[in-house]
Image 1 (spheres, helix red, strand yellow):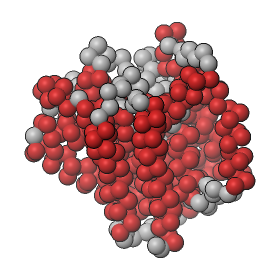
Image 2 (cartoon, rainbow, N blue to C red):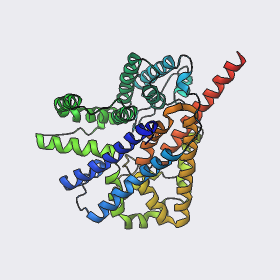
Image 3 (cartoon, rainbow, N blue to C red):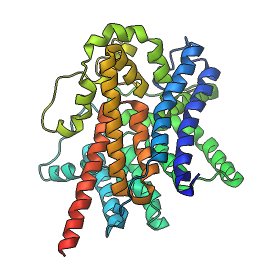
Length: 395
C-alpha cells in the first residue's frame, strides 16, 4: 500500500477493532453495553448481522478514500498565525463554557449571556474547536509545545462541556498520525497508568452527569471491584461502539414497524439541515433521537437520548419504504462525497485520514444533525480560507 495511505489504514483498523472488542465484551458479559446494558436476551445470529452492519459504513468510507484521487490544495495550517488563532479560539470556548455553560451537552437550561458576549458566541459556534484542533495535531506543521497546549486545552474544553468523547477523538488522532506506536515500553507505561486511574473513571462520568443535570444528577453507586470493572467496560466500550445499538434495534424490528408513522419520509434530510436553520426558527418535527429513544423506553419522552447508529437509521428507512431507503442512502453518499471534497481543499495532505476521523462520530451515531453540523463547519472554514486568500491577493 502507498505509504501515504498508511495513516488511513491505521484509523480504519482501529475503528473496526472497536466493534470487535464490543462483540467480545457482549459475549463475555452476556448483555449489551452502552445505553443497553439491561438487555440480555441476545440472538447470536442478529448479533453477527449487527456486527457486519456496524462495520459496513466505515468499510465503504475507507474504500472510497483509499481509491479516490482528489486534488490536494494548500492547507489551512499554512495560514499565518493559524496556531495563535486555534489556541485563542480554545481559550474563548473554555471561558464561555465555564462562565455561561455555552455548548454544554444534554443541559436542560438555556444559557443567559450579556448582550456584548453574544457576538463572540456567534463566532465561536461557527468554527468548531474539535475540527481545527484535530487538524492542528495531525498536520505536523507546528511545534511539540503548541501541540501539547492544544491537547490540554481541548481536554479542558471537552470536560467543561460535560463530554468525554475527546479521549476517543485524541486516540483516533494519534493512531492516524503515526504518533501512537505499540512498543513494549509504551504499552507497559499505558497499562500502569490505566490501572492506577481505573477506579477513578466512574468519577469522570459522575462529573459529566453533574454538569448536565445539576441537583437532579443520578450519580453512580459502585460497591466492589467487580461492579467497577463491569461499569467501566460497559460504559467505555458502549460509548465508542455502535454495535449494541444496532443489535437492540434489529431485535426490536417489530416495534419500529408499529411506530414508523411517528417519523416522516423526509425527516432525516430535514433534521440534517437543522444546524443551518436552527438558529433562525424551530420546526415541530420529532427527531430521530426522540423516535428511537421512545422505542427503547416508551416513558422516556424527550428527557434523554440513546444511540441508534446509522444502520438503525437505514433499518427505519427500509421499514418506511424502499423509496425512503434509497433516498436517504443517496443523500448520505452525496453529502460524504461533498465533505471529502471540502476536506481536500482545507486539510492538504492529511485530508483522507482526517475526514475519516471527522466522519467517525456521525457514521457511528447516525444522527442526521451531526452530519449537517460537520458540513456546516467545513463550509465555514472553506469560506474563511477563500476570504483570507482574497485579502492576501489584494495585499
